[in-house]
Image (tube, rainbow, N blue to C red; front, side):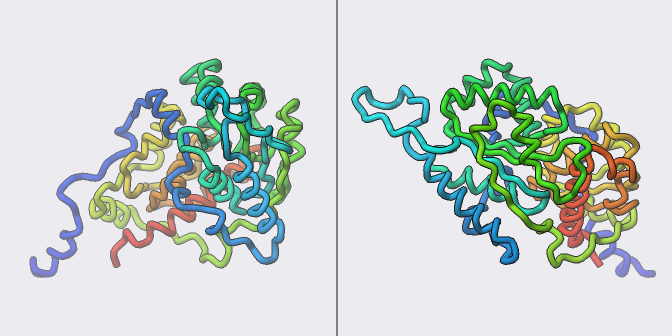
Length: 363
């Protein structure tokens, strides 16, 4: 074969080597944790108007209406009576009804879309609203301390918590105590959650578990049931088959801003990086390329991978992989265990990102 025919095959390879997640050990200051408590990039532009209810699930249409009204009711001064109000200004009437709403539904029905839409629609400055996962909230407490977290978030008008972790009793008590302090300060609350260990029905709703676990706070929440199937699988094709190591490597070199890592080495690296830093681990990445994807060896590793999958999905970072398909990451024991819902969410999200990555491989 002549050199003129081989040159095009080499032209996609960039001069610089790809980035590597395994080479990154980010340090995240506490003030960044607070500043980043906003809906993730994937949900920057979502609004109630962009949520498309399933016509066969009237509860979805009802949820949009109730949440729109809830957001509108959060206008005006901070419920606790902010000192920024003028001395002789009339104190706004106390809001009626629960100061919190709990979005109750299976994974993939659009709960995060609705929660982010509530954040965007609430008439308050961004610095008066906070949005984060349960893990991000517990990380904030760890970084700032409990009292400082109360003081910081107590100035907010709304706190949205995605994926409230009902499967960790210690953290549940910690966050429930925190929420009690914030309710006393006049902060409105909105939350979604996962199911408790042993509550394994995929379509099972968690409101009873949630309201029981938050104990004295239950009166502050209105459960809002959202029925439906996982929207990521509505009419979409099956997950693409994995590519070869060579295809993944070439795509990594050809894609500016891509990271290239061996999957087992990446799993080892995640054990050395606190999950609160997984978002920073993906800073400025345009794609993640993984070779030799294998079954996850144990539950601790699996749970770390779930957090990374969430951060990649939030940031819409395509994932190109060789080895096993993502639906074979977790063992049958894991998929039938107490964290089943998390693992199915990770599979669903990684599958979506694998579809997004197909265009990185050139024919």
